[in-house]
Image (cartoon, rainbow, N blue to C red; front, side):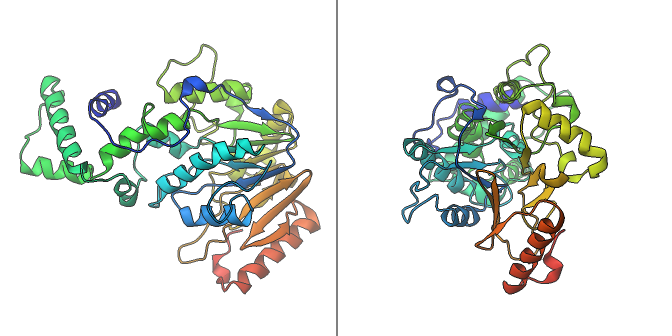
Length: 376
């Protein structure tokens, strides 16, 4: 069905603005390792919250008053899951695309890693896409494009009737179709396709990278995937998003496997005693001291597990509670969490960890956050 949809969308003329400076996949080779980086800023899942992202960039001194790169040789790592759940996905993507070449010219780098929601949007799984995200793609021709897409869908169904038989193409059918395909849906799907403005850009990125002594990826790695090097994992993700055959002996079903880099939650959720063997295996396999993840909303702050071997950056925010706009900064061996605009030494174990949590609680209280907002 997705192949049919892709063909129908490709037959339309889509006026989705192409990101400036975006490369095609053919122009990009997988690079998974960077050495001697003095400063790394790590931002977890954004899910369409442009205001949060902009505030984090400003607090990290990565952008100036005109939203241009001001981070010099710093590396920004955004751990994936830019889209879905809130309306400003497109604004975040456009800013990332703008900053990428600026950072490189300054000696820095923007790593926009691939998360499960990037894969979902490219694969047409829009369960979490909000009306505002579709609306961001609308223009004066959107109704015409949807009409044209409807006509092609009907023609395709008549040419290849489903086993259950053709539906009745009456007013009720069209009303249901329009409800399932709001204005902007066609443009959104086209832009996120492998040949579209944003899908093409995603295909220039990685799912797993190492910067010095730290591994960065969206979700984690289960035992089933530890055997593969980073380049193999990245190539497998990109090949799957291009609908290319899996490499013999390579990772299987990497976009959807719950042990894969886009989905695995064990490092964030499993009992530490039970998961410690897998964490140790990943550290040894990739020659790193720690693993930095997004994906799983376990804590209401940047927090550490496994004595600092795993750092979690996807912040859990209860309904009605203020988001702390928290993120991680790594400068050499020093780890800092920025929480509600304050820089705190990230204690990862023992008394240092207890002191860190106490500082977080004090900042939350000063910000007027109800104690019930804490997720520990």
